[in-house]
Amino acid sequence: MKLKPPERERYRGRRRRTLDEEALRELMVRYQQADPDAADELIRRLSPMLFGFLSGPTHSRADTEDLVQDCWLRIHKSRHTYRAAEPVLPWIFAIARHTSLDGYRRRSRVDSREIKTERLPERTEMPELPGMSLKDELGRYLNQLPESQKEVILLLKVSGMSLEEVARATSSTVGAVKQKAHRAYEKLRRLLGEHDGFRRKG
Amino acid sequence: MASDAKARLECSEADRLADQLLERGGEPPEELADHVARCERCRGLYNWVLGPEMPDEMPNGVSERISAEVKRSLEPVKPLPSTGRLTARFVGIFGFLAAVMVAFFGPGGAQRMSVVQLAGVAVLLLAAAGLLAVFLSWQMVPGSRQRIPLSWLVSAFAAGFSTVVAVLFPWERLPEILRAGWVCTYHGAVIALPVGVVTLGLALRGAPLSYRVLGATVGAVAGLLSLTVLQFTCENQHAGHLLIWHGGVLALSLAAGYLCGWAAEQITLRARRR
Image 1: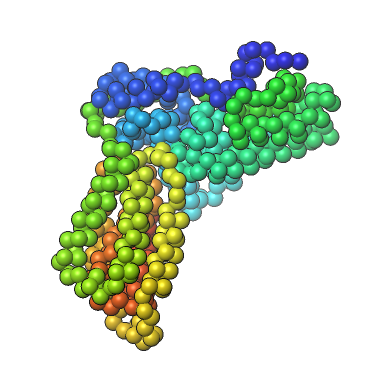
Image 2 (image 1 turned 60 degrees about the horizontal axis):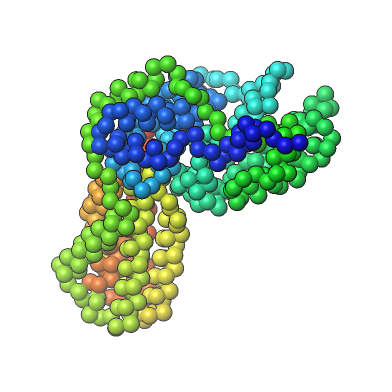
């Protein structure tokens, strides 16, 4: 049985760019020249991706919105460091990654101080619900991955960047990114397999 | 979950093919695509993992709020020069600073070295300065293609410096190594401090993301420049003295830079939390 064209196209989605790189570069250059329309257009196009990348299991929607705003302010302050010959997404996501890291560290500090004064219940994994779809299950398994593997998967998945671009965004090498992605996929498969086995037993 | 036995049997093979696809890129092979069409487990996993997924729109009003904030301070900016130009500038600046300081303190060390010693040390120091300048340029631009980690660079220099000094310079006895060497380290630290401030000022013209890596890089640059000045001005050109007291300046400067970066990170996080 062959895949129908739209399904095949969806499967090829990893390499498909939902954003035209050339158009993004042109918008970035105009943004550097203080074109307000280019700034609007960049924010409109890239914010959903940043929202997807910066949202986490322990963040409220309002927290994620604050992180996206913080990220844009950092992008704005750093816009002179973008060079027209370079790809836009690794530049954007390198900044987003540090926004996320800072946000995580800030929250950790606040959490650790709060625990000193008040005993909080430990965070528990999201419970498995009967009507949960495979997509929801995968989202839940993603949160069980080590932070660095999860980050690589999110960058590959949310932004559609290539391995080379993810390596740039994470100040890493292509080999290290490949290794992290491979380990993450293996763990996801294992979790999925265990889950299937459990269901079959049940 | 696989819907039929045939599809379930092929999952491990599909995983292998998917790994190859991730490794090499390109189009999915026909048999993988067929399997994915039939197997619910693989379709779910690979469509989810490999397919782009993002909300089409942001929550109401968020983009508008960010746009208004950004446009409030929207002014034209001049992009940074290319990595090559930045590197050349840094090497020029470091070279100039080193030359001025060597001239100021007097080139007593250079006069005591043989041509071979001079050539060996000069090549090593120039190569290290060039590579550190490239690394500093990468730090200034988010998303730069960083081919070498700083730890490799520093380790390679430490190994190279130890080898060149151990092979090309004469060894003295232990008491002589320990005697009065701290004066050189002290002078090196005094030189490294202003050089570090200048280097930091240059680096902050970009947008360094990690304060700790930036601190270590600035410390390494300042330490290397100090080491260079000591090498060409100090009249004690014995291997033990060079390795412990001159090399120690680089190690101290690197550690101090890293600690300063760490402290800056903590202060920034506290300020943001408020």
